[in-house]
Amino acid sequence: MGSGPAGMTLALKLAQSGQRVALVEAGVLEYEDWSQDHYKGRVIGDSYHDLDGARLRMFGGSSNHWAGHCIPLEREDFLPRSGNPNTGWPISIDDVDPFLAEACDILEIPNEFEEAAYTDTIRKTRFQWSPPVLFGEKYHAEISQSANLTAYLGSALVGLEREGQRITTANFRRHSGGDFDIQAQTFVICTGGIENSRLLLWINAQNNDALIPNHNLIGRHWTEHPHTQLGEVLFDDVPDDFFHNDEATFSLTRARQDQAGIFNAALQVEAYSYSRTKKLVADIACVAPALGSRLFEAMGKKLICGARLHGQWEQAPVDENRVTLSADSRDAFGIPRSELFWQRSDADRNTIVETVRIFANELAETGKGRVRLADWITDDLPIPETEMMAVWHHMGGTRMSDDPTNGITDKDLRVHGLENLYLGGSSVYPTGGYANPTLMIVQLSLRLAARLTRA
Image (cartoon, rainbow, N blue to C red; front, side, top):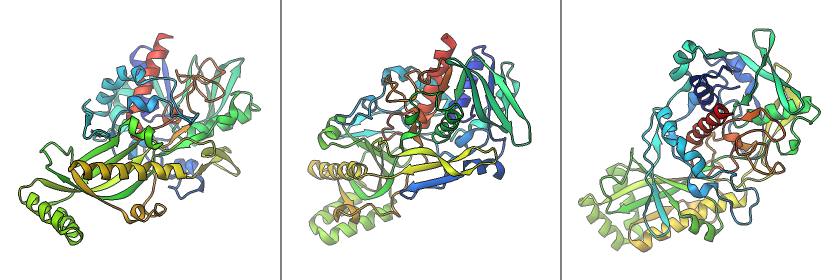
């Protein structure tokens, strides 16, 4: 169920292996207001995007509005953090690395994510940009011609039937009218980082909370990637290949993160034009004439580069950030709408502030550059509400864990307590690093396809 990057990757891979597959999508080929209305909901806590604006209910899912930024999770992102029991994946990077090259092919990006030491505590990494791939457009013809795959559009999942520990039947409802059922050996829900939780909560409630034994965990530990402006930076002695697509990304080593007691963060710099860099140097010269004079001389030799500095970082998973069902609002099919409880914590602010301060100090001490921090950082103020917004990266809610008391799925994405119900997408992430989630979503779908093909 679901035709976004998770569901479509899985369906196509299974069909290509000779499996009979039904790909069921709640939306239709194009955006329709009646379909998108099902995604309306309420946000409680910090300001956030409208829930029906942060995702798309149509063929190809939210790939229809993604920007294409891609980088894999890092090896250390899978490891638990000391003192935080909600962190740590039941798999390692070695479990998903075999699927990275194929995932890159699907997203039409080079499998080139070099990591290099920039200083003793700072790493320079590289994102890649997908065109971006719109899954509905890219795979519509292949799905139409497949002998093993049948697509059902405008068909929303409204229930699951079971016998013992097996799901036997999925119940669907069409906007155009008429219900229908599908019986299968295996069922996989890939409806997004909010909808996976919403549907599991609703279906479990229909089954007197007996379908999923650890039902109190459904929707919990939901995370995003907070994002904000951090200031400006001048780099000294910049080589020709320093920027990739006019940007460069930096992060701290895991050892330095642990020492500071913070989570992972990406410091992303976007190169300024010559005139903008010149103005930044002039501003510095007003407060530090000697440094300004040296920087102007370096500019004349094209050895200096200015850039805008912003951050995207990992949010600590907490129990209170969660997806729940509305008690008083339902969609056209009678399913309670989503309510998202989301609030940023002091730990979230501390991660990005400490990261950028360490970065600024390290550049100054090594002579690699200078950072002018945003006023809210230098004045030790809260992040301005107008400067901080998350980026439609919906993670968690149905997290994976070897321990059924701490997660919804096992390491193979099978729902605990059920033999043949699986989940796909970023809702299974225990934590998200700083990496945009689409690349890992595709890797996990390819891994699940390999698992189901062997079964």
